[in-house]
Image (cartoon, rainbow, N blue to C red):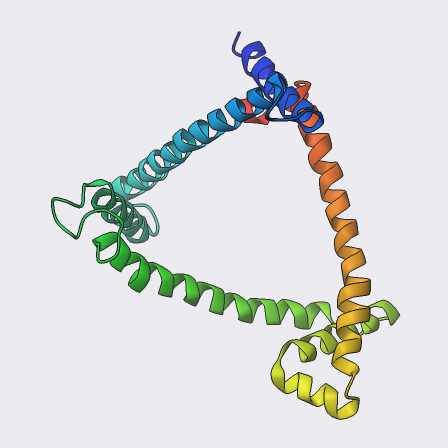
Length: 219
């Protein structure tokens, strides 16, 4: 029962979503069933988010209780979860600091603490990307040399100073890069990757619908 019921639900839900592509969603029963399935997906996703919050609090609480390595950061995570969540869930007619509207505690924490931390994280990632690019773009052979030249042109094309430098060589050189590299070679590779990812997603969906892939059940 614990195996057949989840597999049957996954199969029927996936079958409805596949068949809905071939029917009018407004005039067919399958289209109406698709809308119902999407509503249930939203409901399940909400409970999944709640489960994630409970899980992260429980895991970090155990680490804090045992005073394991880095427990101070885990304590900060627990405090941040409750400080962000509790005032946002309380009604704002009690005080303007509750809720998630402008001027609330949630809004202030998000704009002045969370957003700067995200900006700092992405700014630090730029250094790691530059380090990875330096290792990847070494001209060891003909293919890596071609990659290095193409990446250099694209990076110069993406910044105003580099664009002016390219225009000093030839006034249409940035346009050629945009047309033949970004709109030609790069776009064709992107489409190949998208097609491969779509085939992989279709294969994984088929495995889940047929009950071959059962990792969502912990197996």
